[in-house]
Image 1 (cartoon, one colour):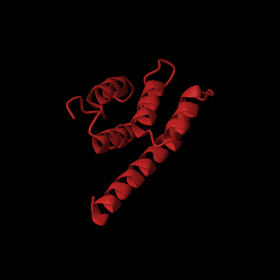
Image 2 (tube, rainbow, N blue to C red):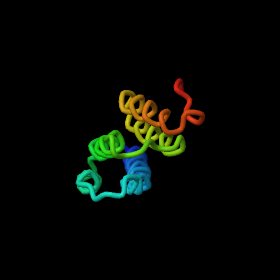
Image 3 (cartoon, rainbow, N blue to C red):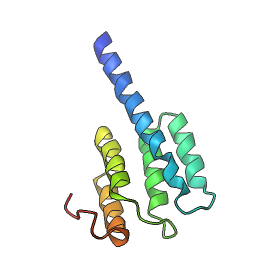
Length: 109
């Protein structure tokens, strides 16, 4: 791997880590303490980005957590796209968000 390639790799993962850290505030949506956040932090600190994002989505899809706004949905989608995964989770989150924000979430996006 060339030096430029290694730097690209580090830049990609640094950006992904920033994206995920910016989503951490979503754990405050239902106002109750959660081990979801603890696992998210643990995975994030271990650079297990896919597991961290999956844990966030698990939390967001619980019945006691409200749907998320389209902006947050797009931020999660961007993180999944950066990893090349997540179609099913985004579909689930989009469906839940449509219940909370019916006029703002495009079901086909």
